[in-house]
Length: 372
Image 1 (tube, rainbow, N blue to C red):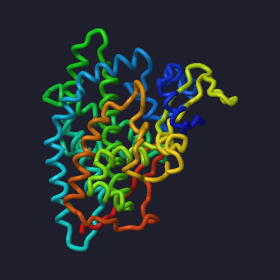
Image 2: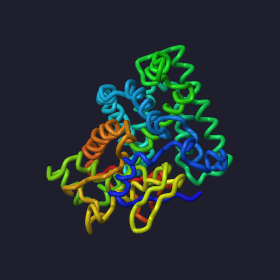
Image 3: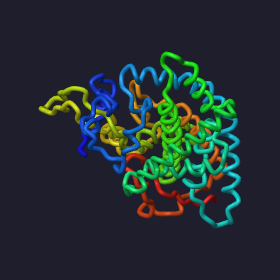
Image 4: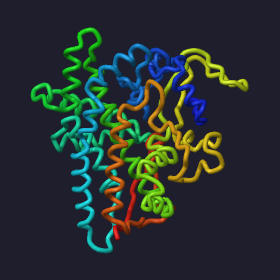
């Protein structure tokens, strides 16, 4: 399968707002329409779901409006005390490490924080369901998975989320799943279908979790490998918000995001034409380091950078609804970690750190560190 990878920030921004670019393969991707994509394809789940991630035009507006009624800014902001509690619990766990020992900050901090937050937000209380969902999310982002894993993950995702929906129909609560069920059952003209309901949960559970994991992972790694930048924060020359935005620019949590499709021929200049039906890959990590925007220092991590323009959470009508929650979690988790362990240091060389096995997810498999 061939796609255009768009890495220039200005061009990507243009295409993300162009009505001639769709995210719906059922309408605008010939290879999908013709049945040429099988369930064994590693990116099958990313294309097959029916939610606002893969919707276009009026259908996208309908879905985003419905989801926005349940996933409000007020609901996200109300999570602050709980996020602080979870951070404290995780930091206490890290502090119990034997003197001289190492911890994996991805597994022990960056990973469990957002999965706990998103699970509680969705009312996903059963520990076995949480663990199954974690395996599903990891596999969805594993873009080199074998065909057997891809098909098994797709089936497991619907089994887990179908179970969650069934539980919340029987025992509704003050959670996002219950709110989405209410929206589905009360909106007669524009209601969510049952598949759209489950697929919306899948989108928000997976994307809302993975982006925050990688944001925390990358920010911690960058500060530990650039101590002069950490000193800018500690001295007040830069803020934690500066750290977050520069991390998003420099090391976008999602490197490349599939897929968009040309609704008609689109001329880009210099003889380049996206033909009707062509697939498009948004290369967010590359766009964040575009020298046409950030000059010769585009590759450098600099929390004092005045221009931190980036597309890490998308742009236009598909701008990530969960971006405020991800920023909130990072704004709490990062200062808490570095204040609790001021002598924090990496316990591995750069050549020992391995990336996650994904061209979508942009983070490390492990992030070993010493606390003192």
